[in-house]
Amino acid sequence: MIPAPFEYKRAATLAEAVDLLAANGEDAKLLAGGHSLLPLMKLRLATPALLVDIGRVRELSYVREEGDHVAVGALTRHRDLETSEVLRTHLPLLAHVAGQVGDPQVRHRGTIGGSVAHGDPASDLPAACLALGATFEAVGPNGARSVAASELFKGFLETALGPDEVLTEIRVPKATGVGWSFQKFNRRAQDWAIVGVAALAGPHPGVAMINMGPVPLRATAVEEALVGGASAAEAAARSAEGLDPPGDLNASPEYRRHLAQVLVRRALQEAGVA
Amino acid sequence: MCAMPGNPNRAGGLEAPSVRAGRFTVSVQVNGERREGDVEPRTLLVHWLRDTLGLTGTNIGCDTSSCGACTVLVGGESVKSCTMLAVQADGAEVTTIEGLADGERLHPVQQAFWENHGLQCGYCTPGMVMAAVSLLAEHPHPSEEEVRAGLEGNLCRCTGYHNIVKAVLAAAGATAAARVAS
Ligand SMILES: Cc1cc2nc3c(=O)[nH]c(=O)nc-3n(C[C@H](O)[C@H](O)[C@H](O)COP(=O)(O)OP(=O)(O)OC[C@H]3O[C@@H](n4cnc5c(N)ncnc54)[C@H](O)[C@@H]3O)c2cc1C
Ligand code: FES
Ligand code: FES
Image 1 (cartoon, protein in one colour):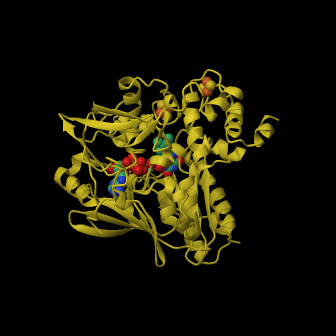
Image 2 (cartoon, chains in turn brown, red):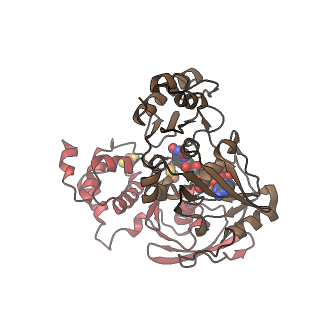
Image 3 (cartoon, protein in one colour):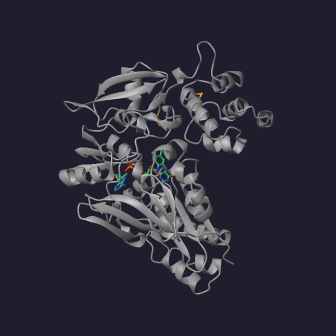
């Protein structure tokens, strides 16, 4: 299996990437780690006319402390998140989730920006970003803008980013010492989650779900319950409220709703909610 | 935040690739030797290694990023070469199974697979060995659990994994090897 023919251009800097996208319109696609895009291209489910390779834009690969936030460059690979001391200290949920993505080979190539921009409801890092209340920075021909995590995911594999925009940074409020948990339910090592939950306890609880709808999403009913002082079990009972999970080979919608409640309860308890 | 200069940390890595009628000239350090060639951008690294360079030790199993049979090292790290374009490896160092042994002397991980009978049909073995080399570079003294997790990207249809795990622990010089067997 090989992709359909395409033109290939390599951007050395962010500015060059933005220019290349602006000059080539909807036919161009960014290539970061390639671990979502290339499998789709090999299956000919994606046939972009031009790939703009940003894999070497080193200026977008970093994890930096910035006051009460941590700034993560979009080109930071899963492996670099997993091993980042800054993340382990201030955002252990994010470091842990990165270490649960796929397998080591995938983590050596895949990037957080690619994972977020792909907008797959089955993927792990978007859920972690939602639970942590991250903000996304993007640069396009008209300059830079910020998008809140809750505004980014629009539809199945569809985000609020324009075809001419490059996601540059993920800004995450520090959650030092706050209880957290990540529950990824799958049947075999390496597999994607059938259902997953990323949870952050504390005064501003964040609970996000994997594979419980067409987009990565927050369990707002659970969050509300927690703010209202509910116990882990009470809050978890509301896990599937308002959600319309998919049915597939692995699980029916009913099974996913059940799983969501079990996993949210486990997550909240592990995160320290009574 | 735009337009900061790039940080050229890899030799050749940031130069614009040269174009020849829809083809690119790539230059890759393969098993310590500089190899150059014209490729179509859609050429997968595994095909370039196998079909152009004749390095057929790297197998293709699933062709869908799942089995790990095609694992090679890029910059010392394990990568599924069916899920990487040859142009993405331009300027990098690639190590395949052919590059591990030192003449007649097997690499310690290869030796350990041999001694612990870490293979049956052998199809997964090149990828398994490369994944193990990368794993041991990151975790020189892994626990059994870390070895099992570290090899989760590699499928074996024959061995049931026990002797593979044993081999990797043996290669790490871990005394835990004996425990796995029991
Ligand atoms: C075998 C396998 C198992 C996997 N298992 C999991 C798993 O368990 N959990 C999980 O979460 N993921 C999993 N993944 C997906 C993996 O995490 C991908 O690496 C990730 O989703 C995409 O990142 P990338 O850098 O490879 O992006 P690419 O594939 O290069 O790009 C993905 C999409 O995002 C766009 N894009 C990339 N970067 C940017 C940017 N900076 N700005 C704007 N758009 C951008 C591209 O144009 C493309 O449309 C798996 C992948 C494989 C192959
Ligand atoms: S052939 Fe590459 S992962 Fe199976
Ligand atoms: S030895 Fe046959 S697939 Fe592993």
